[in-house]
Figure (cartoon, rainbow over the protein chains, first blue to last red):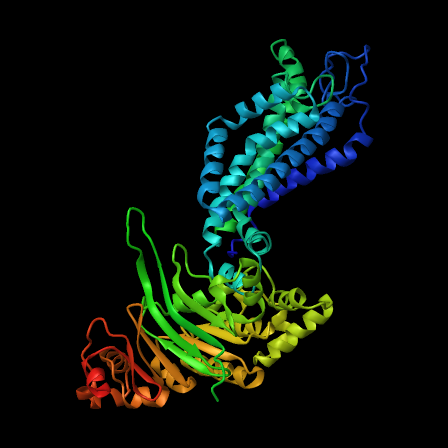
Length: 269
Length: 304
């Protein structure tokens, strides 16, 4: 790998935000009130020292709901992106290694999947499967899987004709072991970059699906749900209900993009 | 003495049939030669003469779409070309080993040297990880690597080309092959390292009793290392002879050209009169004991 400067601001900013979000998701819920607990006494309160991010129309703490959403959204993104990564890389590695007819068929299937914008595909799958956390994860994974297939397949096409692939065969390794054990790990570099970027998109898509009402259902604390609930109050001046969850989405996507960007340069160099 | 040779390649033809073509294209035609037990045989020829594909055919690993179309490759009594793939894998793993040119890229860049070596041991015998690691270090020491314990923990990119080739030889020896195929093992290494690698290959034969098929286009390497030489040109064998005979009395014009192309080789310049004129349709002829030359007028005259 290259000798890029270690003191890259993207690492510090991106990594800082990521660590903060993870900390928030892990230990935040212990310090905030119940995100589902309404409080008729304090409805639509603006941010104050008592309620740092204000309250919504049921008097629920926006801070508690954003923190609760952090946990859910990060987990959804993690599972969806890793699922897409694992399945996509295995399929891509296999199809690239097999080549010929298998490769042709797989690539046309990938073409079909990729002819839909990823979010629309996720939308369709989620709408078909129904509102459940598991289905949201599945829908996003299906939408992003083709990208991994394509990337790893390309790498595998180059890797399978390398001298070390030949050497591995020449000492009697069966093809499957050459592929899984020797070649696939060497093909994962660009795919791991894509994984990082995919984490960001997954958060965006999970929130997007929920915002449109086919992802996570209210009253569960999820960023997209929170934004959706808050939008109707933006015009009347209660900006904090949608504003803070929106900011959380922005920061989360930003941090994954910054890290992915930097990682891409490291892999290329 | 008339012991069966270890490797007997008999009228091997390699090629493929292109799309929309009736006739297959041949890259190796009617090649026959043997490698005796504990013998080092050199296979020379310029790029594209078919020497690498011939050698790869022994492992049944010709570059697709090329494949053996006719002939037999008999190793120790078994015809490798008719063997099922499953058994072929055992041949690759245990009987024939190959080392490649460009040693650096022939090692898995993501695995430590010691792990790559140890895997050879763990996959061929029941042995613990720790013992395999120890054997890997021993093997590194045997192939002349200084600080084997440290090198075992290194990755390929941290080693020099010469060290990588030593590791490759170590990997090949790990499976105790009866036949070691070395495909231009010294290409890309500087001259002092070349000499060391060749010495290591010879030493290998002395220690393990393996036969060696050495592919090269460097006649200097042949002269130093081999006992017999097979000269290939345009997919055919044009001359087979012992090293002494070939350098003293090259018969085929192409052999002569190869010799002349090597700087500082005095032998070839002297006897152009004894070379021969090729005649189509005539096979290899034995001019002197063990000295075969592809068909031509002079060979026929002598035979007569």
